[in-house]
Length: 384
Image 1: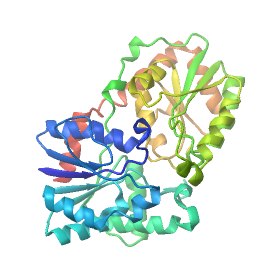
Image 2: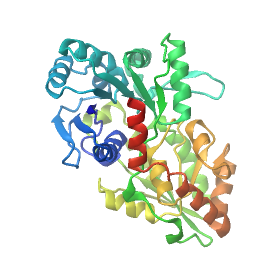
Image 3: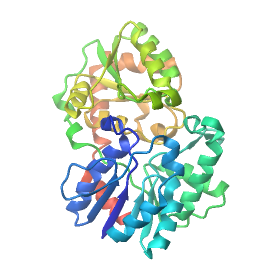
């Protein structure tokens, strides 16, 4: 099988903060191990020399990635690589890929991976457009482009059962028949971020907590900041917040200045430390290894989080709000509905060694089926 993997890199200057790139970097060598011929068209190359690289230009904004896929370049690329399957990691680009296949005279399948859902559903069933994709009122257009992409794909892959449910609901509301083409294929864990929880020291009355998520406003960072104040004041906890982006370009800051604003506010809190891995995976692992437990994002309607998987692979229990995929994936004892409950769980992790050890083992076990080889096998099965 020849796969042409189209990858939009949204953070080319800080690849460690780009989950789509990390996913591809982990998955494509495993696909090559399985005998697949893989070409990645992206602004940056994969590290494995068996994965052919076709350079593309990084889109200037998240809207260009969705509305300006470059039909002429796609057609030429398809003619040159002659794929059996084209993977669209930007679902909104799938109609353009279909048109390019027609121009190129190719009968390749289009497999769309829904890395980012531009919507979520509240527990009441209410559909909410992603506020980060609603600049200038574009949210409805992005949602409709996503639905058009669903219609253009032959196969659709999503991270989780939660994401599958939401994608199915959006398809039904927009008149798209998904048939049997939707498959749940979770992202692979990073084997560099795996540790036996027995090798980690349990807290002894005081715990180091970690928050390793993007600081965008739509990730629930304001609510997390309020919770952080309470955690460091009321629980025996110190908190490290990862600055995953570092210095962003003026263009990205102008489009959304919330990460810088929230970072500065968190840095002003007593008991909170801001840390950076400087884009280095070893430094990132060391930050995780120095923590006892982690906190999930308070993002309304979270469909999946690579950062949560990173922590669990290292044997770190993750405290999470009872919402979206987090409610599906996190152990019941670590889910909260109120800030009071979150503080109580953090306190118990810091002071109850037996409870901590059990939760650390459960966290690590939750990633056992996410090895790159196992995920690649599921991925290829979904493409057949």
